[in-house]
Each structure stands twice: as structure tokens, then as C-alpha cells.
Length: 118
Image (cartoon, rainbow, N blue to C red; front, side, top):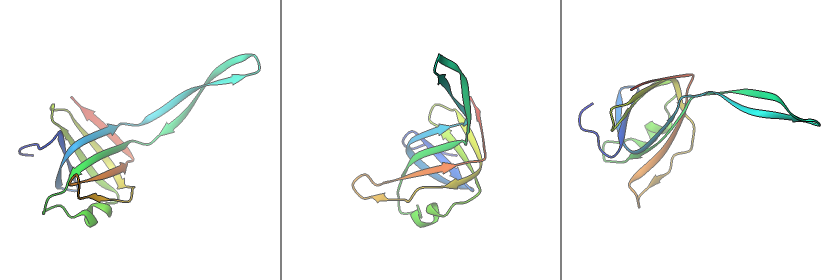
């Protein structure tokens, strides 16, 4: 992937985006206690899709409009500490806003599956 700027990079459908922040969430399920009249009665689990948020460094070669349109793609995450994650069937979900003050753009992807290494 070359030199990593900031704290890591995303490779989205083969295009590399350098990032100042990346937060991968591998998904699975959440659990919470179910409470009845006599107190806790057990656990309720809810499936959760994998998701990823990142702050992309916007340079002249970053097409923010194209970034908004990614659907059903592979997103590879490379963290500065060497850890990596792969999100399959990922779709960019939020409305992108390019901040001129920070020179960045925040993205969010939901995915069908996610795996991690490292």
C-alpha cells in the first residue's frame, strides 16, 4: 500500500484513501438483559451488521462524489500499527460533507461480512 499517512488507509474497490481516523466494527451481535416483574429474566441478542467509519484526507486526487457512490464493494483497512480488516459487500451510507477547514471527509460503510487479522 505504500506510505501510510495519518493513522491508516482504506482501499475501496482498488482505490486507496489515506485517513486520519478509522474505526472498524466487525459486527456480530449485541446483548442486553431482559427484565421482568421479578427481575432479570435472561439475555436478548440482536444481530448487528459490520460497519466502518473513517475520516478521509481529501487531496486533489480524491473524488468525493465517487466516494459517495460506492455500493457493494470490498473495503480493505490498513491500520498504522499493522492490523488489517476486510469488509465485503460494503456500501457507503452517509451523506458526505467535505470540510475545507480540516481538509477531510467522513465516510461510513455498512457491510455484509468483516474479517480481521493482526
